[in-house]
Image (cartoon, rainbow, N blue to C red; front, side):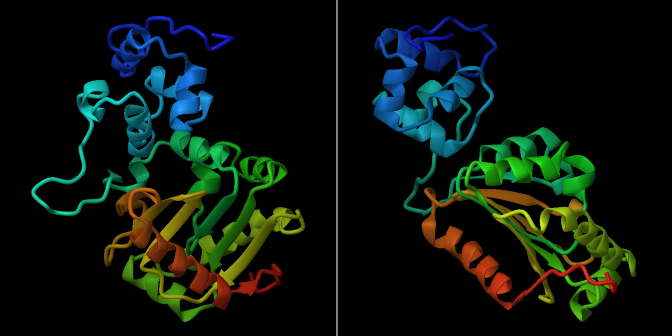
Length: 261
């Protein structure tokens, strides 16, 4: 599709087939749907191909077409009901179950901010293809990247290592991440700090979406759940995570990659 004026029918199993049918019935092109919903045209194309499932995107498109979300995506979860406030979110049972390609898409799509708060976070370098390049590409788009890593000499890191049965290995992971980030420290737009905070939740921000990796006592971070939450769905809850990152960031110190690491 080049001019986005027509919608070519997709295979029946494609999760965007009802959207395609609705657009064809209402004679709405991708460009027109973008104008009505303020959803990026490339994102709409991904939705049509069944490659994007964010609730906020679906809701914006459904509202633009004046249709219920469930008419376009029968399996979608509808928020609210029985007077009980709910929050639209996606849950991964463990961080290990988040596909590497998902992280690539999340960080590659960021246009304003990437904020990462972890202890070690070595999985980003070990499992996300081209992660350093993703960060450098992001800053060329004008994205501000802030990366807070646990201070390997801190009591908090050593205590967490003991709780998770990792011993000194967690501190070693912090050192490894700091070494891997060292070549990026002098790139304008990328800032690295170390922190000594008892970390209850690792957080990964990409613009106005946060991925919160909550820590269950005694379990390594990779075995703990990840919750996706957009600011548009519940700004107060989103801001709690954002405030946590800001507090840790402000109390952290710039990484100088000194010999002790």
